[in-house]
Structures are given as structure tokens and as C-alpha cells.
Amino acid sequence: MRVWILVLASCGRIQFDPVDVSACSGAGLVCADSVTAVTCNGRCWAWCHDLVDHAQAVARCTAWGGTLMPLSTVADAACFRTTVVPTDSPWLGLEQASSSPAADVGWSWNGDGLPLDYTRWDSTQPDDGNGGVEIGHEQCVRARDGTADWFDVQCSDSYIVACAQ
Image 1 (cartoon, rainbow, N blue to C red):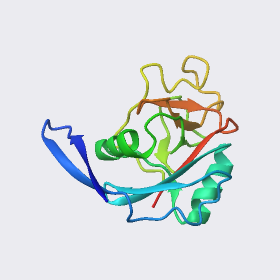
Image 2: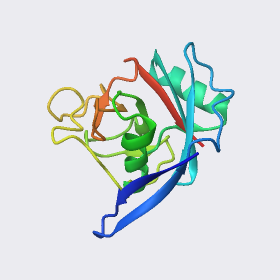
Image 3: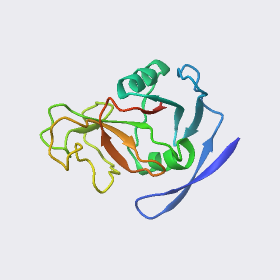
Image 4: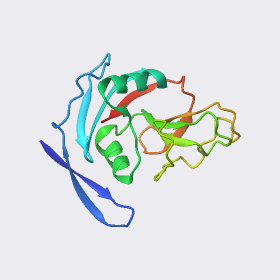
């Protein structure tokens, strides 16, 4: 079955991207409840509503053959909120290096160390939980309920598992 997603590109053009909801499989993603998987923007996205800490989410995604969900482009963000996880707060694969000197630096997707080409921080984020002074308190990221905005949070917090291949 194919559905179509409207993607608003940053250059102002409108693009329609097909989403094939049967092309990938969540088989192998270990969850207590059901796993949902779809193909969007050329990759397989799989998620479930288990609430786990960051390390457990990373381990589950890795065992599935993927990574925690990266939203590294506008198109990924559009897939995420229209098709993948439209209402919940999942872990994202954005991590801050432990040696970062400030709350707003040192972030990369799944620890790859590369600078970010796209960001969608909430207007008050990242803040390390204390208004912006880096103390190593919040070095993982979740998406805000019902939006594509990002919040830095403690890696020991619990959010749903969302992965990509």
C-alpha cells in the first residue's frame, strides 16, 4: 500500500514523496508490545511504545540492525511526525560528546562526531536542565510530544524506542 506525504522543502518548493508502508520489517526489534515499521524518505523506520532508557534503546536498535532515529534532514523530520511517530516522545539518535564545553555544542547523530546540518531544537533547548550551563546533566535527546522539536534530557530517562535503517 502506498500513501503520499507532503514534504515542504527548505527552499520553498513542495514535493510529494511516496511512503511504502509494507516495504520494511520491524522483525528483530525486541519490544514488549507490537512493532510498527514503514519505509519513508528512503529508509526503514521501526518503533514500539516500550519505555526504556537511552542505552537500552540504542541496544535494541543496534540488535535490529539500525540506529536510534536520526532526524538529520527536513524530509526525515516530515516522515517522523506525519508517518512514523506523530504524537509520542521517542528517543532520537542525537547525542552530546561528554567533553562538550557548552550545552549547545558537541551534538552528533548516534555519536558519529559530525556537525549537524539540520536542527530542530525547542526555543529553550539545549539547556542541560539548568538554563544552559554545561554540567554534563543532559546529553541525550527526545522529541517533544506531538512536535518535531528536540529537548535535551538525561540519558537515564525513559522514552519510547524509535529506530531507522
